[in-house]
Image 1 (spheres, rainbow, N blue to C red):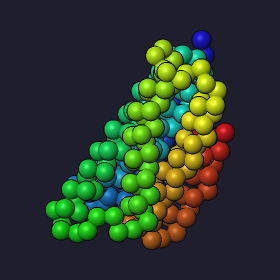
Image 2 (cartoon, rainbow, N blue to C red):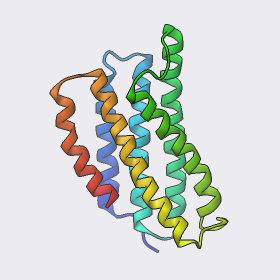
Image 3 (tube, helix red, strand yellow):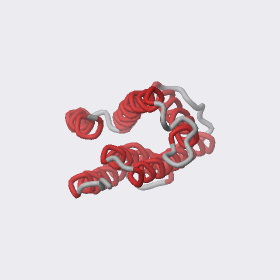
Length: 183
């Protein structure tokens, strides 16, 4: 049985620290809206990346952990969406008026569909299509593209909140993270 290595767990802990720091930075001063970047960063930069690392380690137990973590990422994303939806409603502002918001909707809906479909099709014990290499490869490639879209959405959200060079300094780190996690 393969297990997640200490270095992969270290990546997860580092991503958690980065997510919490970035959410605090973006959400200054702390208010209801601060929960939006926190939920999204935890979902797509921490929990999802941990799920990817578990899957890369291989084995049945890691695959089940991957599925549970990706479900957790989906729930954290839904929580972050709820916060921004309610924020807009409370302020009487229109919804989905930017590329950031539309990319976010695409990511969130894709995560919900992928989570449900993958649990049904690819679960190692009960998956209806778990033996299909084509389906598994399609899931892997589509999920990589979805992860890149999620990170792009995170960066555009950060840029909307703070149009400084700090955002563009985060870009090389994101590329390095993509290389580490996805390949």
